[in-house]
Length: 68
Image (cartoon, rainbow, N blue to C red):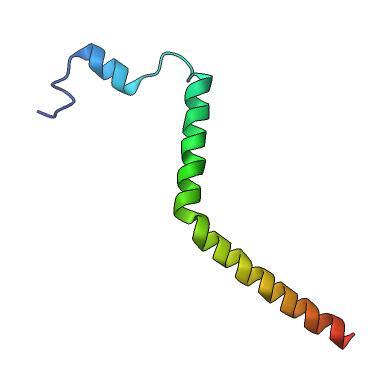
C-alpha cells in the first residue's frame, strides 16, 4: 500500500488538482524568488563569463581595425 493511497480522497484531490488559476501575488512572489536565487547562484560565474567575452571582443576588434 502506497502512502498516497492511504490518504483520504479529499486530500488526493487537493494534492493533484487545481480548481482555479494561481493568484497574481503568488506568481509575482515566485518570480521574485526565482530571480533573486538565480542571481545569487549564477551571478558571479555569469559576470566572469561576460567580462572574458568583452575582453575577447575588444581584442578581436583591435586586431581587425589595425589590419584594415
